Structures are given as structure tokens and as C-alpha cells.
Length: 88
Image (cartoon, rainbow, N blue to C red; front, side):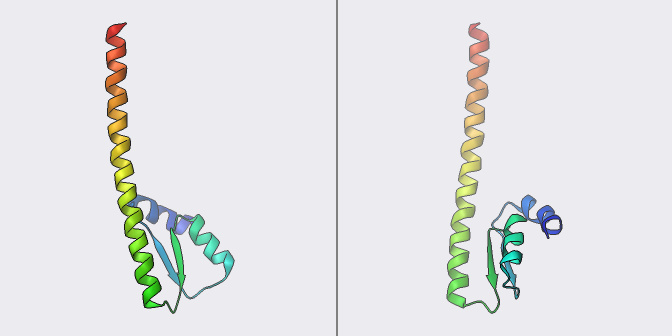
């Protein structure tokens, strides 16, 4: 499972919820290890699914903010290093 899904999940950049009829702990662990953010067993309760989707949207938003802050920090660091080099 790790190989099969890892190449799909990581490039997406969005939270990924596995939905399966398998409820074995080993399957759940493999799904999470493959990069999944959550795992739901069918049949899924509508309220639980909606709650998980809200949480995943929140996580996606935080990831985007973190990526943006990281890019800003890298740019500030680059400018700082250039300034330090000029100062000698």
C-alpha cells in the first residue's frame, strides 16, 4: 500500500482520507504510513464524515499558511545573507 498510494498522496498537497471497508488495525496503520491523514471505515456516519472534512480543510489551510511563511522566511534569510556578504 505504501508504494501504491505514496506517489499519489504526496504531490497532491491536500489532506487525504482513506475510505475502506477494512477495519483491521494493520490496514489503518499502512494507510497512515502511506501518507494518509485519516482513515474511515464504511459505512461512514454522515456527521463524522462532515466533521473530518472540516478538520481536513483546517489542516489544508494551515499547511498553505506554513508554506507561505516558510517561503517568506527563506527570502528574508537570502536577503540577510546577501547583506552580510556585502558588509564583509
